[in-house]
Image (cartoon, rainbow, N blue to C red; front, side, top):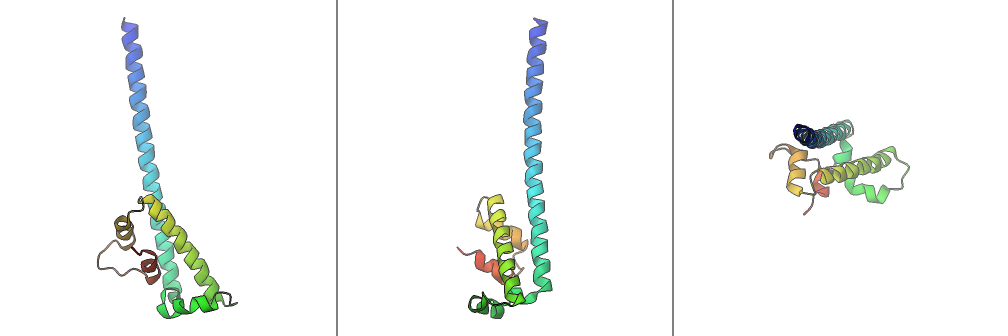
Length: 124
C-alpha cells in the first residue's frame, strides 16, 4: 500500500508541477508580447518624431494623388502606414480586439493626443 500512495503523490506532484510550469510559461509569453508591442510603439513614435510630415494632415491628404510618385517622402509614408497597420494588427490580437484596451495601451493617458494616423485606424 505505501507504494501506491507514493506513486499517487508523485503523479499529483508531477501534474501540479506541469500545470504551474504551463501557467508561468503562458504568463511570460504574454508579458514578452506586450513588451514587444511597447518596443514597436516606441519605434513608431521615434519615426514620427524624426519625420513629422508622416503625421501631418496636409501631407497625408496628398498621399493618394502622389502614391506612385518617385518621391522618398511618399515612399516613406507608404512604408510607415504598413508598419502602423502591422503594429495595430498585432496589438488588436494581443488585446482580443477590445477597442478600449487598445486605445488605453496606445495612449497610456486620457489627455494624451494620439498620432492622427493611429486615430484614423481606430474608428468605431
